[in-house]
Amino acid sequence: MARLCVCLFVLATVASGCAGERWPSPPPVDPGAYRQEHDHFLEGERAYLSEVLPIVGIWPLDDGTSSFGSAPALPIALPAAQVPAFAGTFRRAGNSVTVIPTAGFALRTADGARLDGEQPVKSVLAGPLRLDVTDAGDDRRWVTATDTTHPAVTAPPPLPAYPLDGRWRVLARFDAFKAARRVRVPDVRGGSMEFTALGQLVFPLDGEERRLTAFDTKAGLVFAVWFKDRTNGSTTYGGYRVVKPQKVKDGDWTIIDFNFAYNPPCAYSMFTTCPLAPPENRLPVAIEAGVQQLPSVKGY
Image (cartoon, rainbow, N blue to C red; front, side):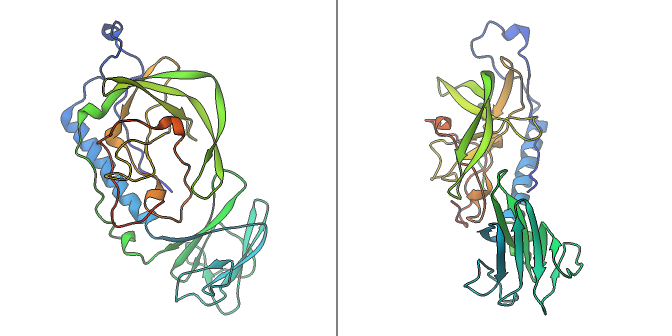
């Protein structure tokens, strides 16, 4: 799922005038441009709801065949009256997945073309449902069902967020590990995902030194930081939130801006795959910044 990539105001190295300070202050920003950037971020996060809220099911896709349709006894029982009891079959052989349509029911590609016979596929339309073959970066495969007629597709609900507050924009030093660590992180589907931990971001907050483990990302331009704080379960999603500061070298400085903290997809749907926040990334303070929980939905 594509997310909005927010351009944050960052600083790779500290100006020489700050060299004597233990905790230098972040560089100033233009208030108008900063607010515009934040508004753009919130618009993108609300737009993301149109992708995740319509997800109505997820099923593991094991090697062999998995039939799908509206019949409750099928391995993939679809929640749609417009889909017949037996609509088709997925066949998986390792990383290869094909779909076999049933006679009398048209499965279509994203551009509307009808599927005839067994074909390799990553996404297929079965009536109003889009079935996507997804993975979590490992050998597991899933089939997710998205309702293309869901109201959120065209009109996502308002997404609550804390007001923009500059005190939650902090300068952090990156302390790299001697060697990057491959770590397994538990996920919401009862398994685990593997990530690369690069080091820790060190910063002051509430009068104390804080540390958050920073993970690598596919593009490698930002750190991925999943964190918990004392707002979880009250004003924010009970699981965790995410910030993505710009990636810097060991000993350099970047900005953690909690005003741009956002929810993972599992905050909005139980039919998603998300890693959990590592235990060391629990902050003993209330981070009253960023996106809040969406009360109208139930996530993990």
